[in-house]
Image (cartoon, rainbow, N blue to C red; front, side):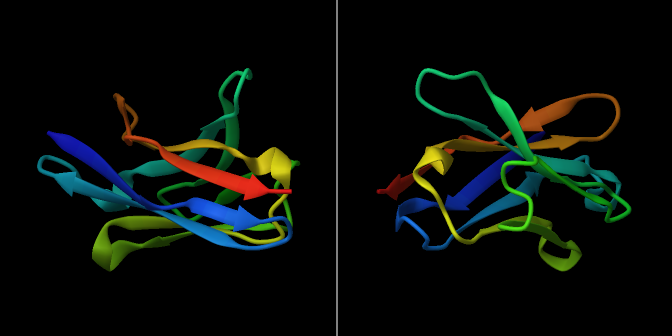
Length: 117
């Protein structure tokens, strides 16, 4: 059973910063083989891709966050971080982490990020 536990988020100011973490817990997984990504759901919108980091460390970002968000992984803590800088009101959303082992994927519980204008 693999469980993703999210932390961080909350309220930030326009132009401010926030962070999110996603820790992989449970059993029957090898963290080093997981591709992990962040997605978000804004009010009235569909889920969209934000950023991902592969098992080999390759990073991808949505154009809307490129240059502002940074994804990283800590192998020793089975955790992926998302540092969000220069936040904008349009970044307001519920953020979800996703872990994919090539056979199935898992989702975190969701964390709200609200950027005040």
